[in-house]
Image (cartoon, rainbow over all chains, first blue to last red):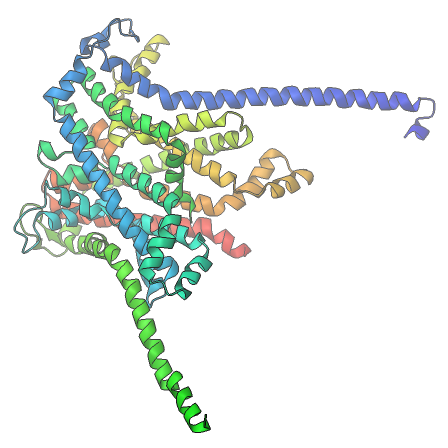
Length: 307
Length: 316
C-alpha cells in the first residue's frame, strides 16, 4: 500500500485508517448503547404490563365502591377503607374456601408425589415386560383434554353402581380424580434416569431389596425433583377451576377459584368487595413466590424442558 | 478327596442348565412382580380416572342423559344433532380464532423478550420475576383483573381512551373486542411462561455455533434464522403442541369475563361442552362435542409433529 501510495507518507495513511477505525468504533458503540437502551425500555414496559394490573386491583379494594366512579379518577384513596375485607371475611365463606383449596391442592400434591415417584422409579430403573408399552400409554394420555374427562368423571363420582354415597361435594371425590397426571411420572422418570446407575447397582450387589434401595438411596437424591414436582402440582390445582366448579355444588365445598368467581353474582357491581377478594387471594401466593422464586421458575419449566 | 465326592460336591453347588433356567425365570418373575408393585399405586387411579373415562367419553357420545339420570343409548342421534348445530361450529371457529391469535401473539412477544433477556443479562432477573407474576394468578382472577381493566366507567383502557380524547368502548359488550380481550388476558398470563421457556431454549444453543456463524459473516437476523431457529425446532414443536392443547381448552376466562356472550360470540368449545352438560341438560350434544374436541386436539398435534418434526428427520 505504502509503496503504491508513493508520495504519501506511510504513517499518514495509517493514522487516517486509525481515525476511520476509531470513529467507526464510536458509531458502533453509540449504536450499541442506543440498542441497549431500547432493549431495556422494552423489557421495562412488559414488566410494568405484567405488574401494574395487580396494583390496579389494590386501589379499589381499599375504597368504597362508589368512589371508583368519581371523575376525574383518583388512584390513591384519600383514606384507607378496610370494610371490603371485613365483608369478604364475615359475609362470605371465603375462609372456608381457602381451607378447601388448601386441603384439595395439598392432598393432590402429596398423593401425586408418592405415586409418581414410585412409578417413575419403576420406569427408569426396573426391568419388566411391558415397560415400553405402559410408558407409551402414560405419555399418550398427555394429550387428552380435561373437558373430555369431566362428564365420565362426574358420572363416576356422583353414582357409580353399588356406591351408597355420592362423591359430589366430598373431598375424596374432588381429590382422587386429579392425582394421575401423566406429566409427573414423566418428570420423575427423566430425573431418576439422570442419577448414576452405579449407585443402585452397588446397593443391589450388597443385597438391598428394591424397596430399601428406593427409600435409602434413590429417594434422598430426588429432593430437588420432588420439590419441583410438588410446586408444579400444587400450582396446577391452585388454579384449577373447571373440576371444582363441576364437582362442588354447595357453597361450603367450593374452592377459592370457584368461590371468588361466584362473588361476581353475589356482589354484582360491588367492585370494592370483589377486588378485596382478589387481593386477599393473590397476596399470600406472591409472598410465597418471592421467597421461593427459583423453585417456582424451575417447576414451571420442568414439565416443558425435560423432554 | 476322591474325584467322585468332589464331583458330587460340585453338582450340589452348581445348577444344571434346566435348573439354572428355572431359577433365572423365577428371579425375573420376582423382579417383574416387584416392578409392578411399584407401578400399582399410580396405575390404579390412572386406569380409573384417566383411561376408563377417556374411552367412556367416546361411548357416551352415543348416549343422552347421564348427569341427572342414567345414560340412555340413542345411537347416532347426538352426532346428527351437533352436525347441524351452528352454535357448535361457531364455538369451534371462535376457539380456533382465539387459539391462533393467542399463540401467535404470545410466541412472538415471548421470543422477542427472550432474545432481549438472553442478550442483555445484566439485571435481567428483575424482569423475569415481574413477567412471572401473572402466572401465579388463577385464570379466574385474571378474568377479574381484565374486567377491571376493560370496565366502561373506571377501567384503565377506557380511562386512557378518554384521556386521549377518544370515545369510551363497551369492550366486553362487543363480540370482536370481547374475544380479543380473552386473547389478551391469556397472552398477559402466559407471556412470562413462554418468555422463560424460550429463554431456557436459547441458552441451550451452543455459543460456538453462533460464533462460527458470526466469523463467517452472518448478520444477527441471519444467525437467528439459520442457526438458532433450526436448533430450536424440537423446542418449538413441543411449545406449539402444548400451546394448542392448552389454548383449545380455554374456559375459565370465558366463564368470568363474558359467559360466552355477547350472542355466543365468545363461546368456545369447552364453554359449549360445559353449558350443554351442566346448564342446559342437553348432555348428548355435550358428549359428542367433547369427542370432537378430542379429535381436533389429536389432529392438530399430529399436524404439528408432521410440519415441525419432518425437517429434522430428513436432515438426520
